[in-house]
Image (cartoon, rainbow, N blue to C red):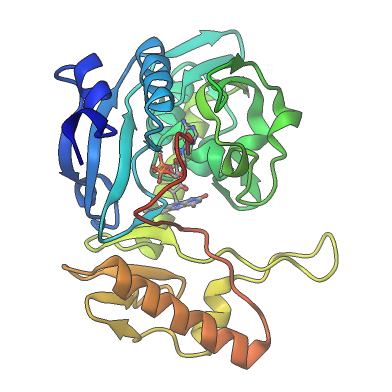
Length: 316
Ligand SMILES: Cc1cc2nc3c(=O)[nH]c(=O)nc-3n(C[C@H](O)[C@H](O)[C@H](O)COP(=O)(O)OP(=O)(O)OC[C@H]3O[C@@H](n4cnc5c(N)ncnc54)[C@H](O)[C@@H]3O)c2cc1C
């Protein structure tokens, strides 16, 4: 292919020094898995981000917006895309409302809100990742999620327009939001919290962190729960934990190459050192097969597998 028709030529010219070539994405995912990105940029400014998205759209270059990579399994072949790592992290308080840019860490935000005397998010202490990633998957635990607190937001639509959606526009559900389908890039959100007691909030946070230290891998790389819990048969009932079903079909102890089911939690896949995405996918398929055959239940992935080829110029 002649260099003038190379899809990245124009982008490289317009953003000198910003775009890096062939950056291994295993460095930027908590799984420690993922081949190289064609182009990689870290962006901390919303205007710069909008310019980059517009330029990628003009060049028909696919874009992948990366938070902290804590919910992702990226292909061993990497991504034929411009990967933008979100570093926009400003936080601003207006009474009980906190306006936060989408690249801010979710856990650091929780600590910051408590320092400001606000309560509400403590239940989620210790969830890794950015606010943008949390909103994308409506991250949460103990029956609560970030979407419960979101008042409004600002996002960039696939055609470049900036809009200010309200909570209702997000279609929040269990581990789900419209961001999984609409290709928008979240710039910032406004969360509504309540007045709190710093000491009590800090006590709850310590309690949640201690629980996570018991349940989650401390040494091995992972992406959290691999499968979603199962919807209850009757509304109002509790979800069936995928981990319980996986335990009952003997998932603990399963291993493909360096991908293994975590010894203390059957719904977590760990990377023992040099696991590949292919190994994780093979192991996950076996876990699903066992649950399907034993219980007639189809497990659905919570971790997003990202193939090497993406459609042009979508956000997430
Ligand atoms: C040890 C461990 C424990 C975990 N515990 C929990 C838990 O209790 N509850 C829970 O819900 N999750 C949990 N997770 C999963 C993960 O931490 C969350 O899903 C987190 O919110 C992902 O954020 P991220 O920034 O890492 O997103 P990434 O993994 O980087 O991205 C996930 C998706 O979000 C999209 N995205 C990211 N930012 C934006 C944006 N600004 N606009 C549009 N799209 C965007 C990406 O394109 C991608 O498709 C856990 C993970 C680990 C490793």
